[in-house]
Image (cartoon, rainbow, N blue to C red; front, side, top):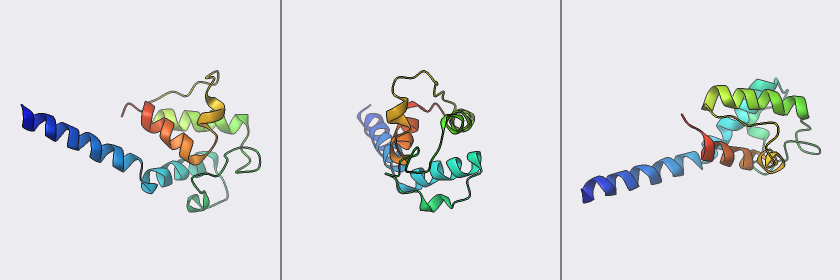
Length: 105
């Protein structure tokens, strides 16, 4: 039983490390660029880049389209009436962290 627990803990740690790597943020950046047809390269979006206003300049329609793309790819829902939306969509890093925390697939 002890070995099973140790294996499970190791598996969880490896999964968490994978999801917090720049590769996962890059995956989210690519999803943003592809789903919104942005004319920039995904690798130019820094983790702390604001997604709205002075950052990428996204608007509320973009947020809805991006939420749909996230739902389709990761099996999770980001609701338009979520009181945390300002924090969730603040930057690439915060969006990736939220997806990591809430995804089901």
